[in-house]
Image (cartoon, rainbow, N blue to C red; front, side, top):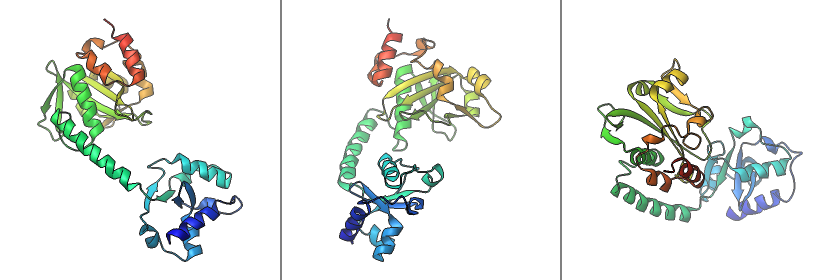
Amino acid sequence: MKEKLAKFILEYNSKKHGSSDHFKQSLYIENEDKYAPLEVFLKSENATLDEVLNLGYAHSSIEVFPNERFEKWYKNQYSKELSPNLKKKVGVYYIPRQLEVFNALEKISECYKVFRDHDVLINRKKLPVQLGEWYAKIIFGLEQNKSTSQRGFDFFLDGKRIEVQVSWGDKSNIKGVKFRKSLVEMSEYCILIFLSDNLMVRDICFLDSEFVLRKYGSKGHFIFLKETEIRQYNFSQSNKQQDKVKNIPAMLRFAGPVFAMRASEIFKK
């Protein structure tokens, strides 16, 4: 089966199929960075999906895990862009590089131990969130106490409650960073920690909760702060609230290159 699959995909890619209706397919299979419609392969070889899965293949949705290589292949193969509607349905069957995953798991396990030993992680859930909260804690000198509510932990600065939210990714979240309105109402300040894909700080925003409620509050239970709307208040753009930073060396140490350069200028003493 493995040889048949490799041969089929190689032959399929030896010519263009723009005149066919294969571009409408929603499931594809990959071999050595080349793709082919899964259903076409199964029919041509009278094979089943179970036989493919038995080879070690796994499904990946490109809406969940964007695949630029596939989209480039699709455009080249069918001479058309992948439509937004079809993109929501497309899945690619691929063979995970299990050795790389296994080696990464060993490294992550070691990293988690370091994070636990240095009081970064409380549990094994949501590493970026807990890491971002830890950044906020050491940069602003926050106190972290167990909450009496079900949310876990609360942060305080000079006895005043702080609401901390973390956004992870090189690109800003289109919907914005979500704050629960009731928690903003209970707090004095809102801190947003923006992390890059590599988990370094790419920016920080420190806002008065009253200002957030007045300017961005809505009738719903949540407040969404879009990065484009609050960028002017970010530390990379503004020198306001810089007096709240208690540990400038820590902020610069964990900052990404761009933010570190800008912050070093703003926070010169």
